[in-house]
Image 1 (tube, rainbow, N blue to C red):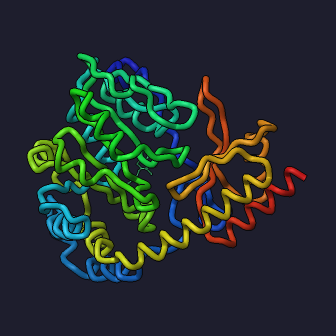
Image 2 (image 1 turned 180 degrees about the vertical axis):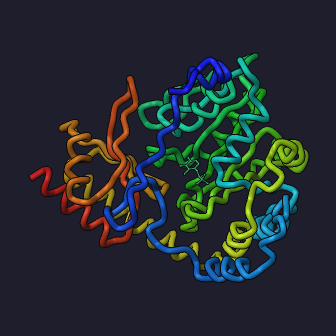
Length: 353
Ligand SMILES: *Cc1c(COP(=O)(O)O)cnc(C)c1O
């Protein structure tokens, strides 16, 4: 047991973030952490191979210039200086909290949503404030209320665990009523119809984070990025590690930006599977929220979510059981291949029979 007095008080007080289980490969049909069930584009794997034959004795490009160029082109941004590359979008979120929220200051997040935001605030010795979604997963006016100590607002859009979206118009409205930056975490935006990238160009306080972990099937390489106005990017670059992204991941992510056709096909496929999953769950009596992400949130009137999670696990299917104090619990099921989803549904049917 470590002597807690050795550490900063904020650290001694906080609880560790618990990511979804990562069991040894092959043991389960894995539908618990919203990874892509399909392998990444072949061009990405080729790019990693080529990079592995390159000068590994040299440090990588500190600003991942090739990636920034490719991302700016792919997303129709005014230029590469609107992009900051990170070791997963989780690192980008860390930089944002570190850059904007001081000790004793406050960040805001909707509830229920991505639990990591609270951990990042805890590390910083900052406070967090949760604003509950309305019953129909809209954001109440209080989410946009400005206040002296409030330094940062974080909004996953599409949200996790619900998969619901807040429209760009509403995001813009919220940003206008706040005095601090509003981060739109678009980890799942590739599965949705809309996104907030355009807003970034009109409001310096709106910033968008993206990841290659979900839609591009690259959770294993750790690459995410921020889209913000160039002056904001330059300030935040001051606090990142010099070499925050390694050479292999930069090569992979750069290649991924050229795989628009692959992405569209996988999106179509996964959105179709998502529709089937949602419909069948609904037929089985679940309350299912219409999802714009690569997962489905469901609750059964029998309330036996934890038992169903255990039953699925016993049958080699791993989904995410989530419990939110004062709110409720349910299951978040990632969209897998059609075969994986059929297997999952079969076990669920067996449980309910
Ligand atoms: C998965 C996820 C991330 C993290 O993405 P990485 O790039 O893998 O770090 C960020 N935000 C949300 C809401 C996520 O679900």
